[in-house]
Amino acid sequence: MSRRRTLGPKKKIALLLSAVTVAGGGAFVMASTSNASQAPTTKSAADSTVCQGLATALGNNQKFIEGQRTNPDAQSEARIANREAVIAQIELQQKASGCAVGESAQDSQPAQPEQPAPEEQAGGDDAAQNPGGGGAAASGEQVCNGSTITLSGEDGAPAASSNQFPAGTRLKVTNLDNNKSTTVEVTGVSGSCALLNNAAFEQVREPGKFLIRRALIEKVG
Image (cartoon, rainbow, N blue to C red; front, side, top):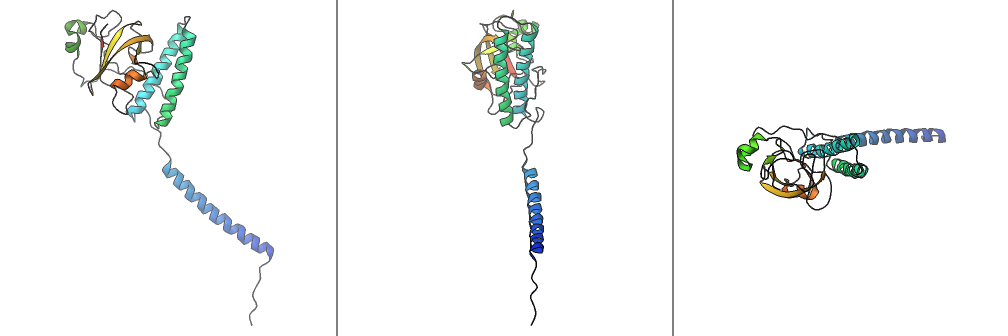
């Protein structure tokens, strides 16, 4: 008759701990591998048109704040506070879109080579002689040549802001990629030639995009 060997309490505890350690380690490795494969990839402005548009919007607002701090006036403090709130909203959009939060770019891209010559459409020879636009541009002339268009992040009725045109100026913005246009009034100062607020940008943008690469901007009043 064989005798059954009984393990002592200490050996039982040691075996249990060993089993838990092995099982737990395996589970940890599996979880780590699974999480690593599912980790989202953060996109930069170079990877995505959406990210580039948001980075440009953020950069334009930063540029505006910098200008207000360099040459302050009685309204600068309020304007800066407003734009800082706008930047916070843009950063939330960057996070939601999988973009690098806080990435900034300035609206300084040259005109696209494939863009048709809109001077003939908008103002003939006079427009060609004044390619940079500006507050002195005649009604109907093309302005802001080479500028891409993005949003300021500000709410409210459709409007624009500008660093070249005074409040009350009317600008017609056409997205040459979908031929949608909007005519808006300049209501404030910004860090670029023509910056649309959220409502105006929605009227001309392509779905899912925060940047208009090919735009025709005309001063109409």
